Length: 390
Image (tube, rainbow, N blue to C red; front, top):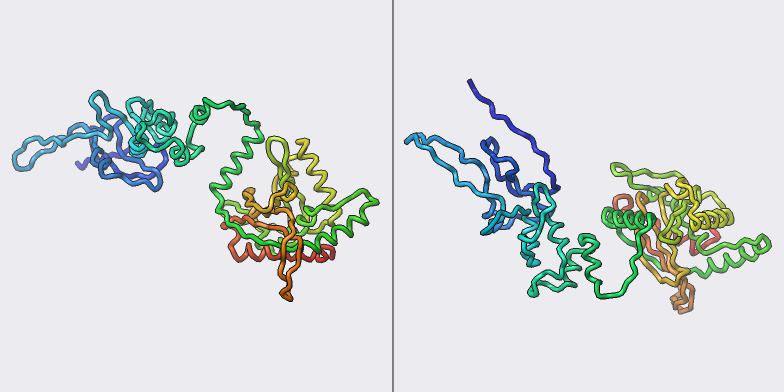
């Protein structure tokens, strides 16, 4: 009778890549809780000295020698760090970090499966406990990054300084989470352009003179919203959002505008901005901004859209790079208008009002050439605002 080998399927507790298999297929007598493989973080390699320390905690497997009929025993070993007193289970990355930082693994309580010491256990150690010959505290903080350091460790850094602890509001926590994920997961690229806005200022002044009797007034931001909405119609492939396994190209121009509020920001969405007049856009934007500041926006008023605008010009900012608001394909960062010398077509120099535009685009949705075409279209409408009135 032929005896079939039985195999078991195990699910790894940690995420990573298998760097070395310690228990070969079909092995018998494997003790419970024994390591069966080495898991590495992405980009990590199994070092030579680590590989030499990897051993297999398997009960001696009896094998019959064909010539002598005697029993041979394979030499056992362990995937652990051996000390004179006890065995310390730790991942290869944790061992390497501990060695770099001079951390004594005997003093660490592992948080991994069955008490195994993992990367975060080493990173959570108070940096002030490191040996004097290790890298400086500043260098350690910069290299590991704030994200990987515990709150208590950060507070320990400033234990000798006076500070006020400000609890995170739910809004600030949400904003922090979303922007961190956006910057980490969205492949940003940036396109920059300076435009002369003298004609825009003249047209705005003339329109506001007529609107004065109606107690209404157009802002520069109203023109920017309209210009972006029309540009998305001119370059429809850029009017799109990332939907993980597909791209959704929207028909209407739904523009989200960042509004600063206490503890964070909202991005109310003006829907169908391409077909609304500048006066109606201005009125709707004022109403949405007021609702945002009083925290009365309904979800349908700040969710959706395909494109965002963040204008810090009123705060005296010349230019900046904005973080994309997923799933939007792009966001336009607008700086203030400043007087600069400009070379005219006849090669004479004049002083003009110049405004900086920076387009942050999601490279999964918008390629470089498409982003350049979109920014050029936005610039065209802002440079010749009469096109927005037709």
